[in-house]
Image 1: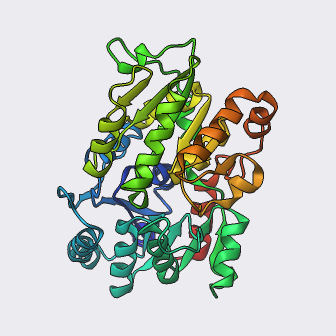
Image 2: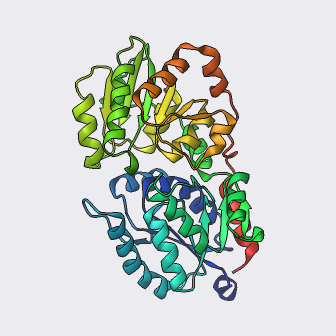
Image 3: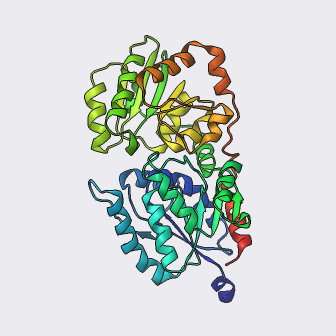
Length: 377
């Protein structure tokens, strides 16, 4: 038995933000279902601290390694430097056969470089997404490009993502189309029968109105673009049949201008960041979502929720092509026009609500682990 266990590939799963944790939780769970095949450990960088810890508790994940790198006002370069410096001793001490990372955060980019420097192979979950615009999303577009070109195995969520990798010269035998693990996580949480407890701000929402859920926090939307979004929300909240719910990111570049613009309106509920259970609850109950988040673009269609994307471009064109999402940018007049169309035109609304989600069937983590196991140690 000791010899068999020694032969198990060592897998270090690394993530640092809430979106990464949500999307990697099904992968960790699947790895833990096969303890005789894989020796698995979880390392968190805590690029986001509070929001990350909420997800760890939700999915019952206890990291073996917590680098605890978050600092107030940190820049992407500072995060990258701290990841490189603090992850290297972990890799040198445990010597994993693989690290697994997800997506396009600075944690992902820096972790893949650190693994490369230490000759540790990299598996990239959600590989191949491209907006083909280095400034949008920023810095995520280049983070993902770097991670993809350092990685040894690429778990592409869609055929389109695979095609992007092939065009960049990545070998097809290292690419596996798996679906997106966020659908695995979403379906798991959505199946739980959860209602807001007494005293929860969500208990005060008006069930007689249509809820518009808003998530907007991208770095490229700081400043005037965010002001444009807020202008549109003020107009939409003036309708008699609408209530706007906006969980506001704690970054002062988001929190302060949003509260200055919107805190005085009775039909806009501004919340601190909500945990994933509450976010899924809101998506299930809402009529429409306005978002600059990548994950929400993937999740909402599984719940029949039309998505208006508050960005100029998206690295997730499959949703637009399938009809589940529409890119509207940050111009207030366009946001108002597109949201009003969906609120007032039932046929237009149903065309988006009933479109098939192109991002997966809830079995992405299983496919990732099968591909990893077949590649060998």
